[in-house]
Length: 68
Length: 68
Picture (cartoon, rainbow over the protein chains, first blue to last red):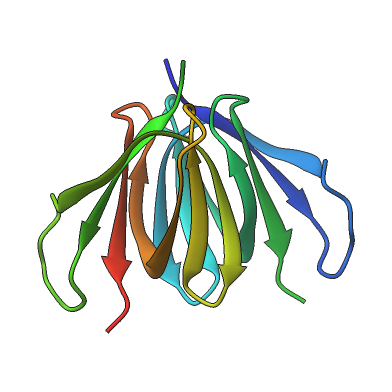
């Protein structure tokens, strides 16, 4: 399975690691300007108020920077 | 490997399939407002002027809507 884990960092930091927000994410859909609905392979849904900072799919890692 | 294929659609269409833009993408990095640098597992890099419309990672599919 090729889901990714989502990590988040506060706005304005240089942190490239972040804190784990949701594991095993399958779907990411924009809900508005810097608002995303993410859904895991287990059906868990969460909203992220932030923008994508980086995606490394082979490493299963997507990093968001949260809105201020 | 958990790379995705990138598809693109013109701005303003309801097309949810799109046309293949780049296969086997590992990294996606924002370069600005609705500008992305994407890199495949083979090292091929391309710039996309568009916004992410949907991501379905288990299906290895990321759809962009191109800027107008």
